[in-house]
Image (cartoon, rainbow, N blue to C red; front, side):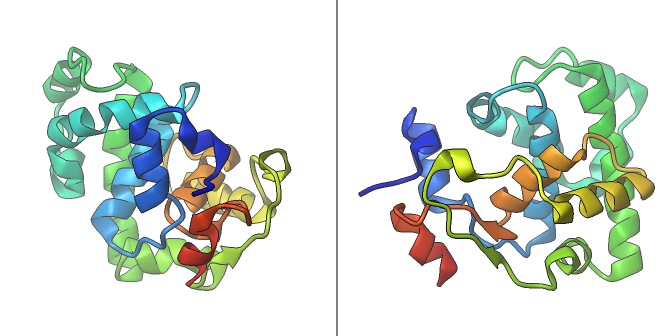
Length: 187
């Protein structure tokens, strides 16, 4: 089976690519998890985040936004001692702030899903890339999303992070046309 080249470095990346990446996500909890993980990835490799994903699930209460929004300064300090996550003060604080913003968006739009998918009119953008070098790091849609998320108070949501998020949650199908997942995800 031919797959996107970025995913062939480790069994963890292969599994993520083959089962999750690019599959449309409409579950608010998973949308929140991936938003936090994409922000945590800033300046690091996605492989590092995948290796720490189980640690994040444990440390961040299975990405329960209601719990995370109530984290105290003491809890944030405890997280900074946890080797199972990226121990970066700004990223930990951003996760807590993003949980608060996430809850506000849910209240305003009925769900985070309704809000975030509105940037692509509720349906995935189907790209037809032939080589990895053709994939953009950002798009005009990601820039609009980033600007709106920042206006709502979200952190670590620049255009590049937003585009990676769009790829992760299936808002765009960026599997190469030669990859077996391109047609599967499109279907």
